[in-house]
Length: 476
Ligand code: SAH
Image (cartoon, rainbow, N blue to C red; front, side, top):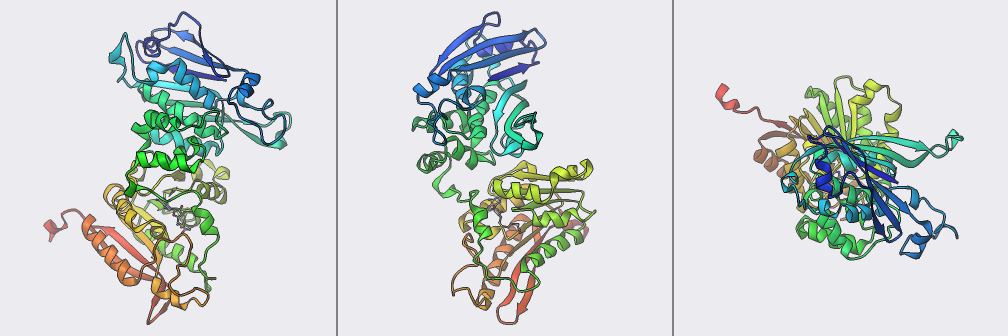
């Protein structure tokens, strides 16, 4: 498998100084299960390409700490490892380009901090999660991603597509940043058995990733996959990455709780449809054109929004990759005509981190999202939505805990969903919304949703926040 790195920085052959590899020679480094060859297919002042070619020995792979097949007897001999970019490519990067990866350049140290235009091409990259995952991993780091997915067998198109992609990543960054992104994210895409999993992997991950991983919206997935789902190691890595009190609980498993709600069967019409309609109507009434569905889940609100011409651009964001995949297929995004397709975008991210992709929207909705966060994490969500993203209108819905007594099959004191961290009374919700509005310069009104009872209020509750016009006072 082949990795090429091309730059058009002037002079382009500065790349060879940064890589500490002479452009006129073919060089080799030994790996535990094969060899890596480094050479330059093109070198000129305008354009320079360095190539890293891995030559993995399948037998050596088995003898070293290679992947031990569980699935069928010969798997350890017959597998894709020699032919794809995997953790071996990361090992090769670390060995062949160790100075560049560690930010050292003997002859021209001034180049270390220069952001250069790079195109990195991975000839075969297995991606569990498809193009959506590739984008979720590389786009937040500023890359333009061009990916070509390969069929399982071109002779049998009915077999469908494989998980193998040819990937081209374009970005203007330092070489060290580029290499550290590739080092960490190649095995994350692959998500196969790594031949390394040891405690020092945490150090490697933190060392190569700390500068950009802390703020990456897919941080949890990256850490989890990189450490191959080993809970203990993952937790350890998180403890180093974030303060204890910042630890997040949100995971992909969230949606499983969504699919097994404890919430009793909804009376007709379905309460959830009422919430979605209420949120859509508020966004329509506010005249919003660019709207964001924050915590979009499986895209139910987005479907309603897409039916309205008023909404020129609709963004769906969720922390759960699985939900996004369901949303993508439910909304049939792949089958939409191009113009419609450009109108809708799904991104993975966490609402508890500032995210520039959420800026510039007229309206946003958080339908049944806040109660999925620990109360201690709400302040972080408030800041990222109301202080940084700052849409003109924000609609928030949440269950009304007082109404729970009316659900016959819900034991007293229990919540409607296993994944709910809290459910608020009307008073609690109003106190939260009012102080939030005051703090971030919004006006807020509260509205009931669904059937209402004089004693306990409505099934669900909604707050509609409208940004205050700046310095309105001067016109009074
Ligand atoms: N709004 C959707 C889904 C509600 S379920 C609907 O009404 O149908 C709550 C959703 O919030 C889940 O999809 C969950 O993954 C998402 N979520 C929880 N914490 C989040 C966070 N920190 N950032 C973004 N989404 C989050």
